Image 1 (cartoon, rainbow, N blue to C red):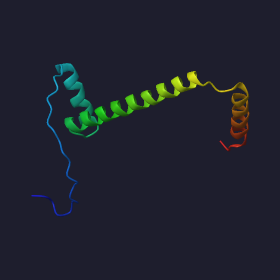
Image 2 (cartoon, one colour; image 1 turned 45 degrees about the horizontal axis):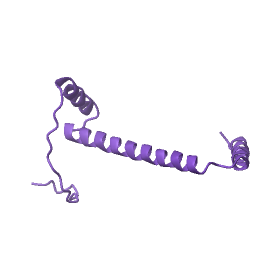
Image 3 (cartoon, rainbow, N blue to C red; image 1 turned 180 degrees about the vertical axis):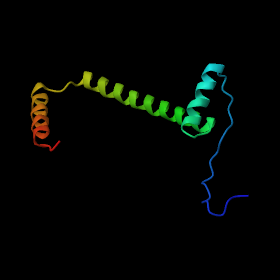
Image 4 (cartoon, one colour; image 1 turned 60 degrees about the vertical axis):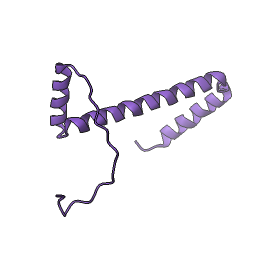
Length: 94
């Protein structure tokens, strides 16, 4: 029975998966999850989400580099950008 003070959660479709893991890694995951007061499943889900975000960011970086190689910045634009940035950094209150 649900506690009356908690809000109902949005329904999510979960699948239970089995992931083979050596004992040393499993113990490290359990210790890390306990350290941050999370369940093993929540810890592993968060790790998977971080990994996916990281891979997405790396893919975007690769796309940027590839596009830049196909159409490099003109030297005049690079110099102008450096001047604007230097002026902005000088004027900012650190």
